[in-house]
Image (tube, rainbow, N blue to C red; front, side, top):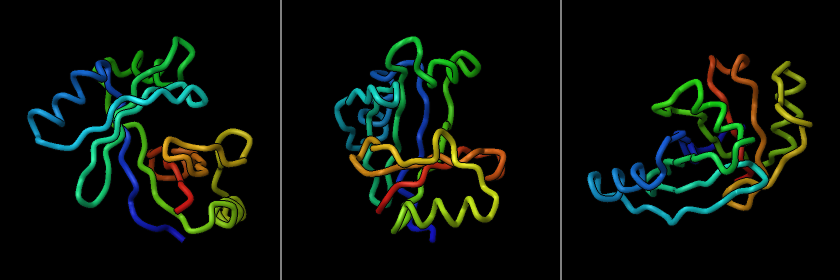
Length: 134
């Protein structure tokens, strides 16, 4: 079911500084910031040869990322995202196996304009997992 690693998401307290670190210090290709109002975040993608790093910054005070930063002021890893060939089949299998899908269980459109779901971290070794339709 699980495909390749799509990205690792890191919450950052300063999006401009984080993007500059990856671009100027590490020499990576960095996208321009994109607001994702449906998810309450602004994202920047760092392109690597085999995957991406997603830098997350809160978009508004009600952003779930703002709550993460309140508890982790320096930021930190937020989630990992894996590709799946069929997100609905993956969801149904995971639910049948006892995994918890966050939210209402229906895929939302993510930052790559593809359907995504999040899985409860307590079911995946303490890690928030995002699944994205390949």
